[in-house]
Length: 146
Image (cartoon, rainbow, N blue to C red; front, side):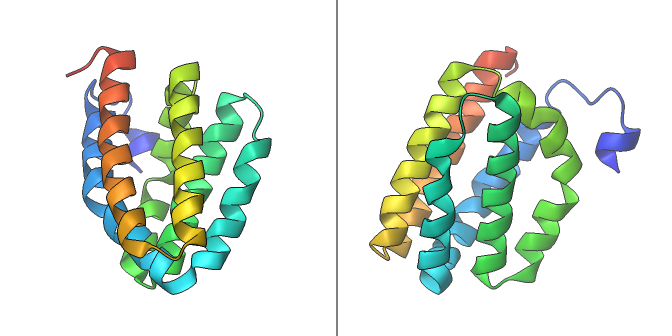
């Protein structure tokens, strides 16, 4: 509803969304690797074939987070990610329009796949925390918003 009716979005709105993701993503990522590491690793195997399209990265990133929430076993995480899908669709392409952000995410996908293959849920959660913080910083850099 926010993406549809709140036009234009406030300049720092994406930062607020990313701040929430910094708080939630480590928990649902750790839980997902604890509960369903092989499925997560299998999905992450597709990351190498994304090409260089901002749209493909945006779609893949949203689906990854959706799958992580589903595999976490906590339906409230999935409810959250579904509720911000419209914002992901609007902002994700802007974020992934930069080679630097695509490379950053590609690195995340590879490291997360490694943690999942090793069944290291704690490392996956710590990785998610670090990368979500870095993603917020990258957004601030590319959008010149603090």
